[in-house]
Amino acid sequence: MLTIAISKGRIYREALPLLDTAGIRPGDDPETSRKLVFDTNLDDVRMLVLRAQDVPTFVEHGAADLGLAGKDVLLEHGGEGLYEPLDLGIARCRMVVAVRRGRETLPRRPRVATKYVESTRRFFAAAGVQAEIIKLYGSMELAPVVGLADCIVDLVDTGSTLAANGLVEVEEVCPISTRLIANKASMKMKHARMKTFIDSLSNAVAEDPAP
Ligand code: ATP
Ligand code: PRP
Image (cartoon, rainbow, N blue to C red):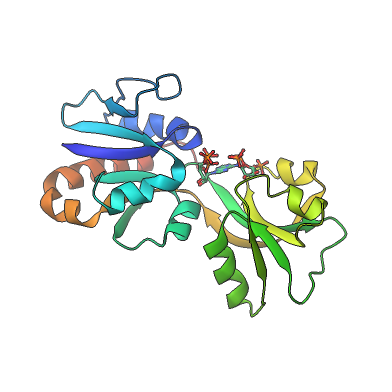
């Protein structure tokens, strides 16, 4: 049996066509069902529906053999105990530093609001900037507007959320996309089945007309 961990929402929606090309069709729709474990059209493949941030934890501990997780989530998790065999190229966006328009010059010790504490810590440390990090769980764009922080580190795709809140990007932290992750023990114990799955998903990514 192969167990695949996936989060609903953006990643699930964008992964569905790839999974379909790879020959895997979920038996239920997690957007409408309350079930958290799904059978698929394949007798030996099932799916777990989790919060995006929990996917690496389930895979690392072997509760799932494979998972689909954003690079942003993996950078926060740390990535120990996991393989990352494939970039699925979906749910693409960028992690950036953004400030209020007109406040592009940061103070020497900026206050940075973010959900991405580890990536932010590493980014400012690499730049030799001593930042005070303020952990938030969402609506980061609000923090500079109300004076909670000098800047934010958040994900940007179209830029419309930044623009709607009077913010501008000043630096890119890193590009983000969804990665296939694999449990290390499963890669040894279920090598042949895992390899078949990874190869078929890899072929589906190669065939995908999306950039
Ligand atoms: P939750 O809503 O449960 O807190 P989440 O906000 O991380 O979780 P999604 O918004 O579905 O869940 O995002 C899932 C993943 O999609 C993120 O981890 C990131 O890799 C990617 N992502 C997030 N925002 C965007 C965006 N605006 N455009 C493209 N990809 C994005
Ligand atoms: C993400 C991210 C930004 C927004 C950026 O939020 O946290 O707020 O997308 O996208 P844009 O550049 O295209 O506007 P999401 O829509 O996932 O909401 P959430 O943070 O509440 O999950």
